Structures are given as structure tokens and as C-alpha cells.
Length: 159
Image (cartoon, rainbow, N blue to C red; front, side):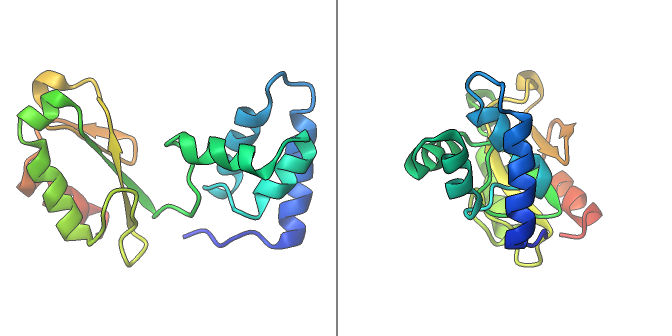
């Protein structure tokens, strides 16, 4: 799991990110994406620096980070497991897959397993509606998931 950046590293790198986006119209989202690309999440210590750099409140920055589900406020695990929660996958047994994943990993949605191996996230449609339930593990989409397939995939990533 990534460690939080040292304050000097954070300020220096954030200064560069802010400078890189100085000419953007509406730069907050691109800045937050760049911050997350740099550290794997948006460190809470970054919010006041970003706010000051854009002359907006910390609450505005926090509101954007907490609103958009793709921004993380803490480091993710080494692997990302996303399970489809859309209606078609639910109708094909998705709730059982969700329950099995939560039980195996010992987490709820947005949680990371105790060993830092896997972060569990909901996703709302992977485009495999006729082949659900579907999930994505580290960007690889998997269709027709059952509990045995889930177990096998999690064993592959040592979870």
C-alpha cells in the first residue's frame, strides 16, 4: 500500500501539478486526477494546498473528492475488484457474488482487505448484461462469475 507523501514532497509535487494546470479552465478535476495518478489517492493533506492554489475553499475541494466515486481518500489495495451492481447482473445472481466477496475479503464496499491485497468497489454496469454477473479485477473484465470463479480469481491475486 502506498504511504502518505512526506509534507515537503507533497507541497513540491502539488506545486508542480497546480502549475501544470494553471491555464486550464475549470482545473479542479484535472488536478485531482493528476494527484490521484501521483499517489494512488487524494491525500487529505493535499486539500488545503489545492484550495489555496485555486482560491477556493477546502470544503469545495472536499465536496468534489467525496462526490465522485473514482477519487479515493485513502490508499487502495494492490488489486482492485469491482463488482457490477446493475439490475441485469443482480437478476443473474450478483448479490450472492457481492456477499461472497465481502465475506472472503472481510470488508464492505470501498474497503481494503486486512493484508492490503484487494479493495472492493461497486460499479454500475460493465456492459456484460447478458453474461452477468460480471466483475472487473485489475481492469480485466470477467463474465458469468460464480462463487467458485470468484474464489479462483482471488486466489490468483493472493487474497
